[in-house]
Structure formats: structure tokens, C-alpha cells
Image (cartoon, rainbow, N blue to C red):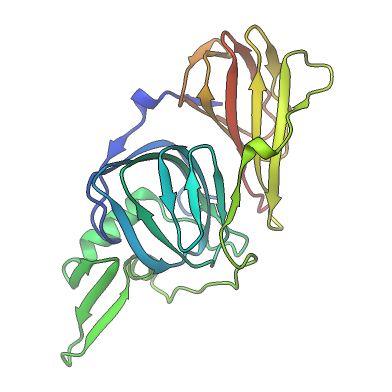
Length: 281
């Protein structure tokens, strides 16, 4: 089990390799294992009013975005408002446009193709190395070959190919566009035999079983988390209490390994957002 409070999570401002990202900060709440097909990053993304924009692009990994404050756009008719959830499958195209302040809980994780997800270290070192060859601008990487011919490539693609030493490949997306959800349209279901505990299942995606759920505990309720067959990530959206005697509060993040079942005690009414990570065994 791993429990991380927001104030203890690493904070950084990203290098400008993917478009306009002024006034953007990240907190890495939880990270996976570099090189593993289920590697992941659970981050808190804050747009601090300076704007955030990228051109139309796609990725070879999966994403789940939970907008906690403000709003964020991903193309015509695709706007996430506070409280909404977006699932972005591997290979799907989208743009990004953030105006004003917003706060998003962001999960990025390896998709069903097994291509994995680059670690923060790989991404950072790849950007530094490529700057000796060309320049990053407006979400693109531009360089000139030995014959003086100009080349342009999506910045993330360029870094990925540098790190992995092979061309990037994309699977056909399983969904034609990002899937946006309003959790308030889903019912809370009482957990059998657990007074003051409710679950809300928002969906399970791809053949590897990426699951999206919510968990609610009333003040004073206790729950031994089920010993599941997938790694479970939880982020507290509201409330306070303890997990195995360690304090949690709003925006604390918890990682529960397969077969583990820690005890959660809610001191105040608590709501968690949950992610069941895909399985590749």
C-alpha cells in the first residue's frame, strides 16, 4: 500500500514541448514502473489562468481525465466541466484548449496494445537530447537532416521514437472520440453488508479491464477494501480519515496492490475516485 498526500507529491512545470503550456503545473501523485506495459502516472494538472492549448494529436496510451474545477475543451462539442469524467482511448485524436483556471485529476496508463507509457524521466531526458538536434514549438519538433531538408513531427512522437529507437505505431481507436461522462447520472449502489458505504461504477474499458469507479463512505464508516485482482488507485475528492492508521485528506492518493485489503476509516463524509489498472499477466 502507498498513501501520498498532495503536499508530499513532486511538483513541476513541464518543458514546453507540446504546445502552449504557460502557467501549467503538475503534481505526480502516484507513478508506476518504468518499462512495464501497465506503467502509469496519476497526476494533478493545474492550469493557472495562462492558457493551455495543443493541436490535434493522439497517443499510444490511455487517459482518464476528471475535471475537479473549471472546464477544459477537447474539440468541437467536447467540453468537460467540473465534475465530469473523460475517457480517451489509445489512438483517438483530440485537441486541448484550456481557458482560465482549471484543476484536473489525470490518469495516463499503458493501453491494450502493450506499448506502455513513458516515465517522467524518459520524457524529460528525451526532450533534452532532441534539443541538440532541433527545436520544439507549438506541439511540433522541427529539425533539418544532413541534406538540409526540413522535417516536422509531433513532439511526443519524436521523443517516444528517440527513447525507444523505433517508429511509433498506433492501433485503431476502439472509440471514435473521447467518451465524456457525468457521474451524477449514475446511481450510488450500497455495498452489501457495509453500512454507510456506496459504490458507483462508471465503466470498464478495453480487453485489459481499465475500470473507473467512485467510492463513498459516511462519517464513521469503515471498509476493508476488497482484495481485487487488479491494482487499485484511489484519490480522495472530499473528506478525511485514515487508511491503516495513516491520515488521508482531500487529494490524497492511495495505491493498493493485488491481494491487499487495507482498512479505511472515514472521520468525515468521504468520496474517492477509483481506477482499476489494466492487467497484462
